Image (tube, rainbow, N blue to C red; front, side, top):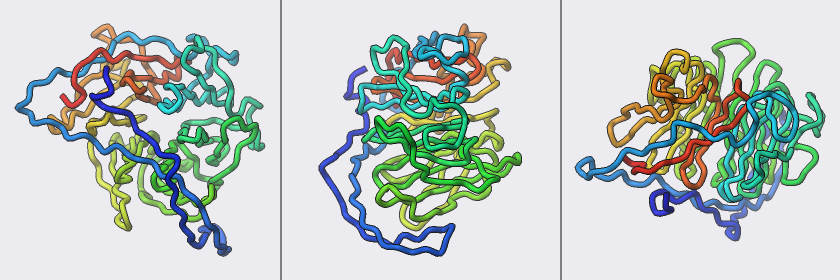
Length: 360
């Protein structure tokens, strides 16, 4: 596919904005003053969907995945994974793949041309809460400076690991009852978004952590009454947040522009939505676990041009789709190839984009 169809997000690193604000910590009464320099990101708004009168070809992805990471057998060697969860494709680094290797307590990076050999870029020092450890990671996000934001579920915290660092910095230390599941950093605003849930079933929330000078200065609970929200992504242009609420079986959208913060269910009636991502036309892609056994598509597309029509992207198994029982996380590379973390099979698979119009 050519760049003219949907160019990737571009960034600007030489534009800065200096802002001075009070640091109001929500967990204490301490107030200090800090000055921070923010690097702006240039967002690419969703492209205008052509009129339905214009003929187009439905986009298509290969139904047979290529194993990019993992061997299919759980293990701890550089070529193996053990229950991979969140994945991230860094389009600013030649589509490098980052994998939250949950049960190996590490984050693995697979560069293009690595032949499936991963490099540990965070953790890898056993299970624990020390600065050089991570515990039960569910999701990751990599910013343009290659900082890795980590939802350390079992550690009840969100960490940031700088590139080439041997230790992480804890940005958010959650209350004992709350666990982080999904994480996304909005480089345009400097806000960190985390989906969180208690250890008790059916009590979750979406939280925004405002940051200055790489430090969390304020917390806003955007949605206090989610059930078990996991995957999320941010429209970097208007800061709309899309959340997959697994237990509620919905995809929710929250508008956070200015001081207006509310939420609405965008689509309901899913089975077990684990993750949600978007293409450049605003079409949504939803991964669901455990539906492969029911002969349902494990990945579906919500077509905005056709009023939210749901279309199979991968599967179902009756159409010779691969075995994907637990597609926990998804990501697109710069060519719109689709990567899927299959936790049970201990692999990350790549499904090639075979052509068509993404807006169709």
